[in-house]
Image 1 (spheres, rainbow, N blue to C red):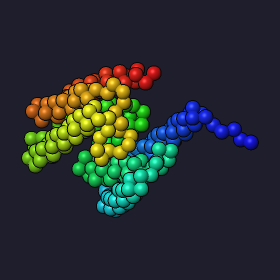
Image 2: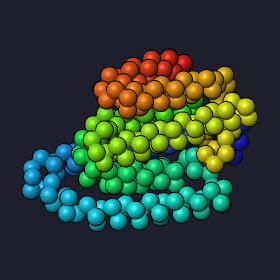
Image 3: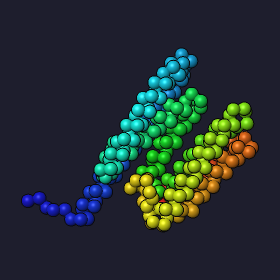
Image 4: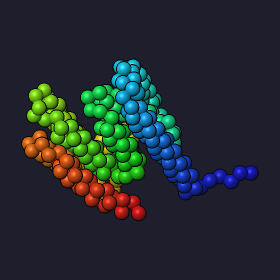
Length: 256
């Protein structure tokens, strides 16, 4: 007769299954990232293949848009059914994130170029890894840092050259929106331990400090404003990266 597992053994087995699911998801995302970057680099190595990519770009945009809509619908269905996807490798949030990253890459390639698309893919993968591994307050810090860094990069090369001022305004607006959303979520999480419309993963850990997310918002906003006012985006992006590295080290030590 099979021995019934104790609650402690059940929790240990569940924790192991959850760890395996997270590891498999991270491996899958890493493989997709490597394949995407290699494919993009190979295609843009020659003018002929890059021209082919530019001609095929409208098709890629339509395909990625369809995938994004399908992923949104599937995410909504799973949310309505309250499906437990913690142990799934191909969970609906993962599929939605991949579809969104590819859609943004397809939309941004023509105006921003292959280098910034690669940076975006790296940033999207970073967001996923931080989401899976670290505490939620560091994930929120990462969100505003990524948005601020990308916006400062765009502003530094586009601002104050005719119509590109509009691009600078959009970048600054995107940063302000990210700061507002992250500040709101950080306040909700510190107060109640949960936040609306963000899913079950974003539960405030013990000792969460909303101040950390607020610091990230301030640094990201200052980096973009500095790039807008002075135009030397590289210095402000380096400062933003330095602040992020300090927080990354602190949170990594907390994991040990």
